Length: 289
Image (tube, rainbow, N blue to C red; front, side):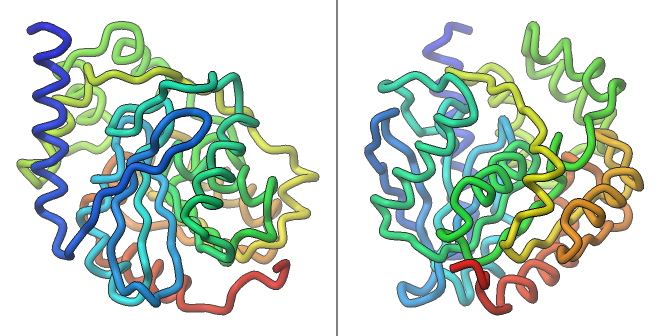
């Protein structure tokens, strides 16, 4: 299949998942020096703003199992990450490192007029989110991290080895085998399964090296934080990561989700993470603002 045909299949699968969202959603493209960012907007217009950052290879549509709960009381802005697969278009300034991601997110919040927004991320998005909280704590209300990678502890060598074939020569079969190894089960939702197959060869412009924040910087973080880890995650050593999160963010709430894996969050068995997220995001905003 040619590259353009593969991209067309990917966008069709992306749209099919988005159509399953149980709320009315408006898709907008936000300009910046880096290109245009696709944002899915939903929820009450007067609700407190909540920005969602997906994991790598997942895009904004990944929140289909969570958005019904999150958009009840929040104005939600679900983002396709710049440089990653999705409908954001990286056609401007280069993404040279984490500093450019912070500048891109600054620009996005500026254009959307979002100060005091809550920020929630999964995996790669949950690496960007705490880095942004350290960069601009005055701009955020609360911070929710779902299976953050390379934030509090290193990633598992076995996870990296298993993921290497997908990185070097991505195919739907290789991605499917990797996710089966990590989660132990196929995704339940057929539209999401089709999306994941199509995502293996979708275009991305930049794979960012994820440097871990320093212990000193994390200990100085003033943004109220919830960390949700998956009991069966193979991305990192969960007890070690939980202990490090509690040590480095003494005020954070750290919860281990039973019978969950890195790649099954947030799409599979969402009831408990949805409950925890809704309760946490309903709390008071950051005292740093």
